[in-house]
Length: 441
Image (cartoon, rainbow, N blue to C red; front, side, top):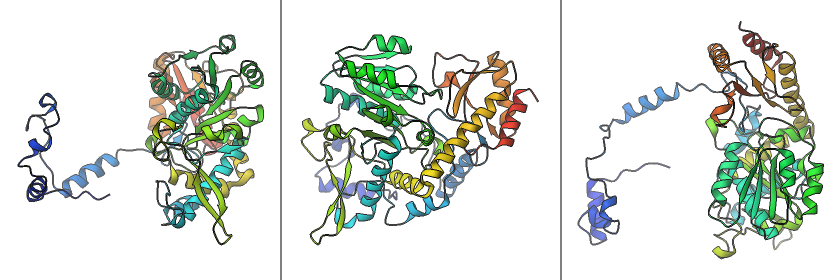
């Protein structure tokens, strides 16, 4: 959107149309103690357009992205390969919009892309229904908790300790002003002991924040005994090209990030929130749902349906206040999955997992990885914080993003721990170089 500044004459004309003499009159309804005195802010002097462009270009040149480096970063954002056709498709005028196609008669291309997106996501997660996206994974997890509360008419929620801390914080924020408690349970056995008739849902991540793959069949059975919904979240959906998807072991709601599906890391965003569920909970799904029907000439047509949010129905009846979806990101994800197909997604998952296995098997004796089955992410434990930080410095010098110090995301974590992720973008020689640096060379 272009920025068109107003001149003093423009401001005077607009004030005159409103019958006012000054800007102070315009803001008279705001209490004076909230006003900022003119000149009280220590703002730099205005720059010319040329100088502004130079300033921003100089700042942009300081960025170092995953395309220029070998990337072992994870924690909810992953460096996967993106077919060139994805950017071409989403750059076409028919699709270049991130907003909702309210007018179906002129939005059939976008609506069909959303319909196909829903279909593929539901299939990939092993679920019956998926919506036309949410904002991001963290808000999607919170929406899943609200959805479970509506379905069960219970107020308490259990958040497993293996969830991405950022998802947990957003969920806490959503629920903080509502009745009921949000229980954080770190130990799996402790979690099952807290199941009772007050709990609306258990939210657990699989693979978890640390990359561990879990068998949730027993938890599913225990939740069913108490009428509790099982909500499974995820950070890297590519895992389900290799491991059992949530629907296979009876998850009621599956929710998480779709960033791995043809969307670049992008310095943290934009991302794509996914939500799918069993068909019987369809009318409680937040956001939008795109459906297929026929027009008055009998031709296949697409339209939004069951969009039970506050802009479409009475506010007090809305299932969500989500006011925008990630339409452009949905189109990118649908394009990516169509191009990759089942075989391609499986290869991405296998190569991502194999890279991590090669890395952990080659670790020097003084550095330990978490035990158990992992997908493409794990935690490396160093003898000391100093040794870890020295390794990160060596890696940076040779253009390797070597991992994320765990305490940056989880404040209670050891300061000698490093969260490391691998994708299909990591080659054998990348791992060899990584291991050589770990050995202090």
